[in-house]
Every structure is written in structure tokens, then in C-alpha cells.
Length: 122
Image (tube, rainbow, N blue to C red; front, top):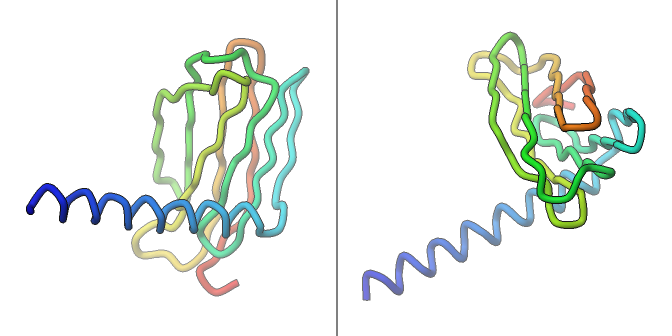
């Protein structure tokens, strides 16, 4: 019984996350950058954005860096088999209602960096 409840909770959380990704992807484009064959499009609004990257080497390890109001997060992530990567960015920093986000993807054949404003009210 407990396992079923945990599975149901995981399914609900996954559905909620997918809804947020779809919502952010449908938002306005706030940045579009290109480096060689690579391209990153950042879309969203308020404090939830998606970064959609294409032109990467399939399955390569990438470095994702996110800096918002001085708070920095760095993570190693992996491109998909088709050379794409999709990140959902929750950019709000505790104690702030607006700010500036810089997201950087470093790959073997390109570096993409975009800077954009965010606000919980707009």
C-alpha cells in the first residue's frame, strides 16, 4: 500500500513538473544566442524559464551554470542522443522579488551564455 502511495505521489509530481516546463516553454523568448552550430533559446516569465539548447554533440557531458542575484549553481548535465538539452530554471533567490539571471552552457564545441531580467510580479 505504501509503495502505491509513493508511486502515485511521484506520478503527480512528475505531471506538475511537466506542466511547469510546458508553461515556461510557451512564454515569451527572453534570449536567443548562437555559437557555431549550437543555439540556446530561453523562454518563460516571472521566475520560471526554460533553456532549450540544440547543435550539441549527442550524449556529451555539459556544464550548466546559473547565476541569479549573486547566487551561483553549477551542475554537470548530459545532452540527449539527438544533441539537444532542455533545462527548467527556477531563478528566484530568497529575499528578492526581481533580479538578473545569467545561464551558461559549456559544451565541447561551444559556449552559450544568456542574461535576462526576472521578476515575480511581471
